[in-house]
Length: 109
Image 1: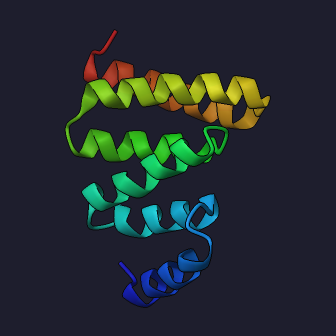
Image 2: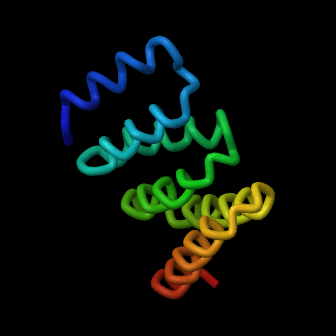
């Protein structure tokens, strides 16, 4: 975790607290060592802009790490629906593959 980067991102966030790019970047920084904190930032992104589809993958990963498998499943499914709404075929493919691996690995069918 790069505390200088976190401080810099937080400073930028002060002027625009709804900036999904900054919120997502903070989530990625915290994901390395503080999954609970990362979860807060990723959840904020999907609240502010549900079509910021790259966040669903990372949020689901954090939830898996925190052993919240049911919520991770919901996040994957929601992310897949938002990828379809957005028409983002690449993100849809990536998220769908991650979801299928998740279902297989955790026997969530």
